[in-house]
Image (cartoon, rainbow, N blue to C red):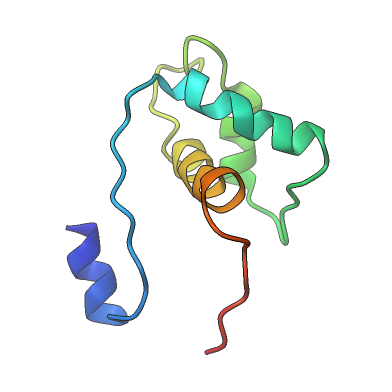
Length: 92
């Protein structure tokens, strides 16, 4: 579904399907190290994402909700910083 929506807006935007083989906490650990090393910075304010980041632990979020924003961030940073090519800015 995501591929169809993105392709409907811009067919040239690459979409990389992913499948989780580990839990969210284990997937987030390498990304948390990128933050600790100062290699990740946010441009702007993302209060809902930052709330999830502060509340997330080995048992998930304290309220039991799914950390959707955090999980999307982890997948994106894993692709860009740990497994993908050098990040670049695309001209519009």
